Image 1 (tube, rainbow, N blue to C red):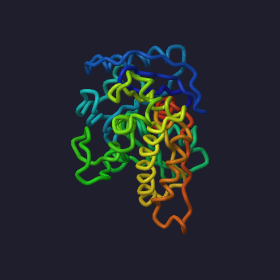
Image 2: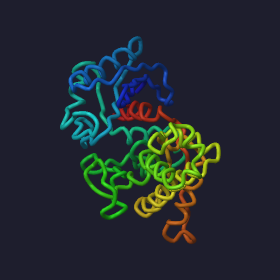
Image 3: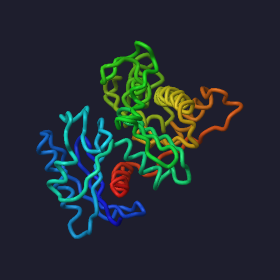
Length: 313
């Protein structure tokens, strides 16, 4: 199969791109994300038609945040969009006249990294995305593992603290409440309130109060040696690495790929994640250790992965 289109549905924009068999993006377009369900479906179709104009397109892959059924056709539930058992595949196919595959956005990003990014050369890879929340994907034996009902790899909602912090999913103590961009912000605000003398740089980047701290301030302050900012990254990394150790006990991959906005800080967060992973890995002195790698495709991973999964059929 030749050219396919990948679509990445974000909270504010829909990105679509024409992708070749080597994972190269030949052309892209973006449109705003409407709030109304019918308008959103039409916007996806418009983006596909726009970016595909002038190309011989074989299929379309859509990465959507939420639970996608085992047939890769229906969005069972989306947390940030009013989709409940939404037959997205059929609706988009009717509008664009091309075969459509719908995939969870974290699965699509994981496949993109496995096929064209940091996972190349590995057959068994676990990907996690440390963004506002925590998502992931499972590739074992060179295949994306989606589970019987299509909703595997919701790593962020593994409960790591019994009766812990309330999560947006309705449960308590979920991993993403301790290892995510949202968690990082909470750590920084709490530490800045408790020890403002250790957060002078961090506080100066906002309005001078812990409440005024934003995610971008934590990154900038950490690069300038701010103790609270650095300690906040280390706390996130401690939880992230411990979670990877648990996933190693489940899946025994050769590599973990860490993506998402938090991972953009590189070794500032990856080095302490590796240390925590080794600390909590059961039998760590006697077994091979999976590599912990930085994602390479950035924000393009989901689009590229969705396009390639459409190519798989």
